Length: 124
Image 1 (tube, rainbow, N blue to C red):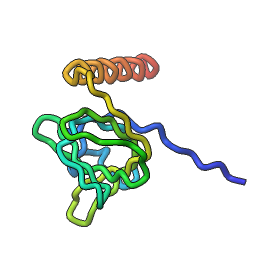
Image 2 (cartoon, one colour):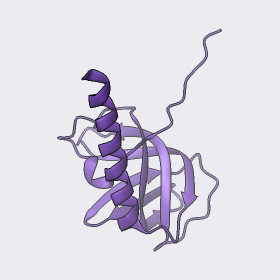
Image 3 (cartoon, rainbow, N blue to C red):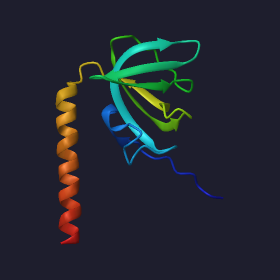
């Protein structure tokens, strides 16, 4: 019996999820964070924003109460529409009100710098 593996969801900013990015791949697993701009209950479709970038989130598999203006983090797989529009099909969602988004972005940059240094030190 083959075991299926579920990816943990790579940490990305909404700005990084664009069609010209090398990580913009159908089915890739991501963890995204943003402020809930709107939510369509009937379609189970949320829109989160970070700065001037927005992203649609399919919430049909979640049991979560969403409030416009609150901060949320979602883990799920990227679905790319024929017009190159990105939708995350969320399997996990949580409210992260109180998260300092600027500090979150800084820590993400430091994490990436550290990981790059570790890779470089192994290849040297």
